[in-house]
Image (cartoon, rainbow, N blue to C red; front, side):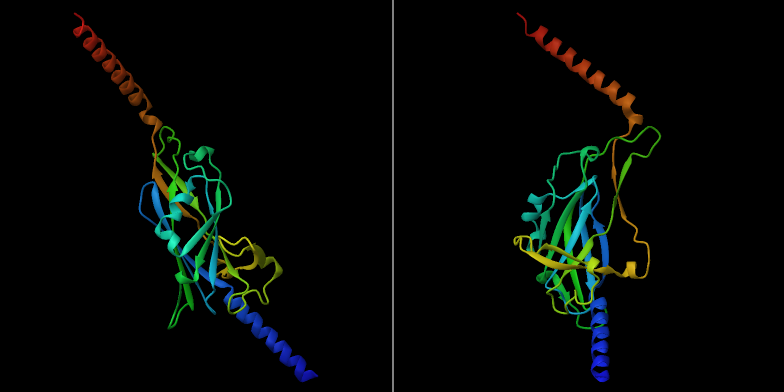
Length: 244
């Protein structure tokens, strides 16, 4: 009896240890390009058996958006799919837009299994994003707008090899769609970031874009009035010269 109890205890501890390692991931982010059109590259690395799919829950701030029609016909659609949880207004300025939430499913084709040391698997995804129009800067302020982008929530399917949900805390297990095209509900485990485990502060990424400046308002108004006046004079001259 005692030997059986000790065996089950050791088995539970081993399962919990494997589960903790399976649910521990590291996320590296970088933003490519400059200006209004960017590429948000996310690399998720973890230990244990490679998952069948990796799910990222992204929250894009009001000053940033992703176009669902662009994603369906871009390189993104080769190994990833996105589900937008709200309607996307691509023409709305940042002041009238709301934060955008979307689910990014990274398929097994984009999950690479390591052959040597380091993380056991790595998943890559490149999401096209665009900065919205921002209001002009106030007088005396630099003519640039800044958008802070936080990290994603990483979810692993419970039915993946390694059983990432075994031994997980109930608060870390949630329901969600099995895929972007299958609305059947599956169980997912919220992965723990290495930075969270080490109690490190995860700083958001800052994206900046040039905007107009109210310092230039008098010059713009004067130039606009002069241009309009010049056009009126040209029209009057043209109409008078064509009279018989």
